[in-house]
Structure formats: C-alpha cells, structure tokens
Length: 568
Image (cartoon, rainbow, N blue to C red; front, side):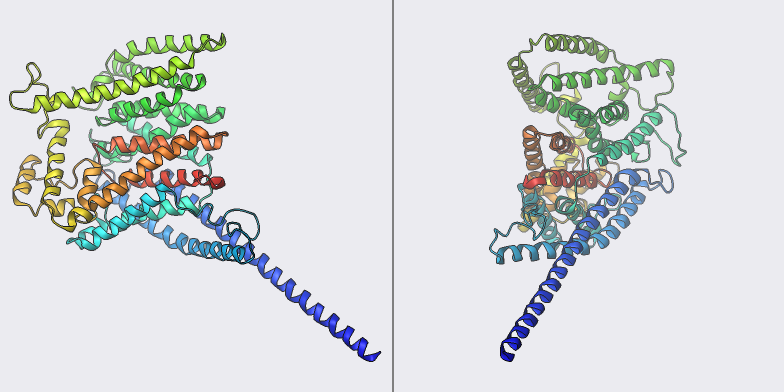
C-alpha cells in the first residue's frame, strides 16, 4: 500500500514538473513572439519616419540659399541616411533571425516551413526574391565589383563633388530598397503626404518663374528655382514626384484623395511647362501616352484621362493669361520651349476637342452605347503613331546628319545630330560612347568605378581637350544619358541589372494593377508608371541626389505593396 502511494506521489510530482516545464516553454515562446512582433513594427515605423524626412523635409532643406546647394543637400541626405541605417539595419537583422528560427521550427514540426509559429504569415512568403529584387541585388553587386576593379577608389567612394553617386551612395539606394520591400508595412496615406510636400516645392517653382519669391534665397537667378536650385536637377525631382499625383487622380476612388491629387496635378503641370528644362516634354508625352493606353478598357478610366488632358490645356491657358496680365513677370529666356508654350494658343485649340470628346463620352455612357472595342483600337493607333513618329524622327536625324543633309532641313538644329544637338547632348553622348570604346579588359564588364566617368574621361588626352573646348573648361561628369553613364561607370553587368530594375518593376506592377480586385493593389499603377517615366526622362538626364534616391524608395514601396499576401 505504501509502495502504491509512493509511486502515485512520484507520478504526480513528475507530471507537475512536465507541466511546469511546458508552461515555461510556452511563456518563452510567447515572449519571443512578442519580441519578434515588436521588432517588425519598430523597423516598419522607423522606415516610415525615414520616408517622411526624405520626401517631406529634405526638399525644403536650405542652408545658404543657392550657394553650394547641391553639396548642402547631399550632406543632409548623407547624415540622415547613414544615421537611419545605423538604427534600422541591426533591428532588421534581428527580424531576419526570428524569421529563420520560426521557419526552422515549422519545418521541424512537420509543417511546410512557410508559416510563423503564430499568425500564419509566410516567413519566406514575403521574403522570396522577385525578378525586381534580383535586378536590384545584381546592380548592388555590380557597383561593388566596379569599385573593387576601379583605379579611382578615393573618388569612387562618394563620387564626384556635387553629384555624389559613388559606392556608398549607391549601396544606400540598394539597402533602403530591400528594407522597404521586406520590412515595411505599406501605408497608402503616406503618398498623400508626399504629394502635398512636392506640391509646395512645385508651387514655389511656379511663383519663382513668374518673379514671385515668397522665400528669400541668396544667389537668385533665372536658372535656379524653388528650394532645389538648378532647373535640370529640379526637373529630375519633378519627373519622379509629379507622376504620383497624376496617377493617383486617375486610379483612386477616394473623393478627398482625388480632389487633393487634382490640385497637386494642376500645380505639377504648371511647373512642368514653365520651369525651363526641355526634358519635361518627354515626361508629359510618356505619362499621357501610358495612361491613355491603360484607360481604354473602362469608360471611367477614359473619362479620367480626358479630364487630365483638359486640365493640361486649361493650366497652360491659365499661365498664358497670367503672362498677358503681367507681361514682364515671366523670368526665363525668350524663345525657349517654356516661353513658347506658356504663350501659345495651341493648348486652347486642344482644349476644345478634349471637352467635346469628354461630353460625348459621358452621353454615350449614360445611354449605354460605349463601344470598348473602338477604344481598344485607339490604343493600337496611339502606340503605332508613337512608334512611327519616333522612327521617322530618328530616320530624318540620320539622313540629315550626313554630308549635304536633306534639302530644306539643313538649318533645323533638331534634325542635325552634332555636338550642339539636344542642348549639347550630341557631344555628351558621343563622349560617353568614345569613353566606353577606349575602356579595356574587365573595365568593359565592370566599369571604371561608381561615378568615375570624369576621372577616366580626362585620362584620354584628345577627348579631354575636346570636352574642355566644348564646355568652356567645365568638367563633364556624366554622359547626360543615365544608362550610358551606368555602362561606363558599372560596365555591362551594371547596365543590364540597372535596366532590369525598371523594366521588371514597370511590367510587374502594371500586371498586378490590372489584376487588382481592390483599390489598395490598384495603387501599384503609381509605382509602375513612376518607374516608366523616370526611365524615359533619364534617357536625356542623369542620376543625381534630388531624383535617384526618391526613385529607389518609390520602387521599394511598390515592392512592399506587391509582396502583400504573397503576391510577388
């Protein structure tokens, strides 16, 4: 009897110890889960704070007017970015540790290894690499290899002064893309804050161009506007931020956001046509053509597109009225494209048929007589027309640039490819091609080093002398064609991966936007068209600290949205 009681006592004691150990294990697991959730949320919040600083504060940072504004902007970006990485990266590494640990536990317990211990969110569902991720990773590797193989390591670390597109800057672009893509929880209202901030920058640009200066900037000049400075750099920023409001107006169903986007788009159009850089024409042509092609499937989309056409024409005529009332107010060179379009009646003649087409479409929709097949035919005509126009222009450029040229066209500078073509783009492009041709061995594959275009160019005596004469002693730091510059700096490997980033992002986000059943995924149109517009604009422009960082952040945000619910 005593032995039975003793056995029973020992059994109860053993069960108590098991329950106690299980309780401790459960407490440890729950504590670990809480820690993991805290870290994930902390990283996302820190990334949101960084985005807000870069998009909403950075554009307004000015220390001493326009004097050395490019370097001052970079210093702000550099310290905010390096400090943010110092905070976020260690936390992100801890998040990765917890994700991998939970994946291993799930695998050991016999599950598919793709679920968290609690919550059911895929450990590697969002952690899988997409085509765009691989392209960004490939570009990061190409930048590192380019630096390792470079003869100009001191210059390649941060890049040319004023441009600062060196190794560390490029790696910061890549790191923040991945942090956003894998750790940031997409917040759609943040786009509204970005639109508001950029609209304030654009409004200052419009006012400055019409000789109104709400902010006293030291070194004010017609070539510098708003809080960004040089009009080419300003246009680069505009090419990245303007599509946000434009596409938001076209795709959102929220009334307050539509109204806000409408006002922001009007300001964006006003500064685009008046700021002075001719590359804005490429942005307008590209974004309107892209949105038109996406609008032919639905009547509501086509109505929105026509509203944006009407808005463009109306804004241009509003600027014309401003110039008529204040004839001496426009502060830019006469005879330029901006001068012409803000005084032309062309947009007035375009406004009338756009309004008529809009009302006819509204009437047809009301009577349910809209033939979508005809609208799809219009898309094919538009694309074919764009291809024909570009093809004919290139053909004329080739024929007219040969000895003798085409009769009656020899005096048209736009149809003669020489050193002066495209505001000296002919000279810069030719220099880029010649630099690449003179590169040897591994340099053609890996490049001469991040932002080392000028360092290599000025080691070639004949080309260096020609560029010095062409630009009156000014230093040519890039080819004014982003992909050609990347080809020289990061080689074939860099150019292919860099091109892959934008091509894959555009195609994937567009595809997801077309398949979206809810409005949230439809915002992928914003990121897709943003990538497209940046790419075509920078065919005649360059990487710089007021455009490229924003573009990589926008791509990272788009990737975070695309990865939601394992859609990646």
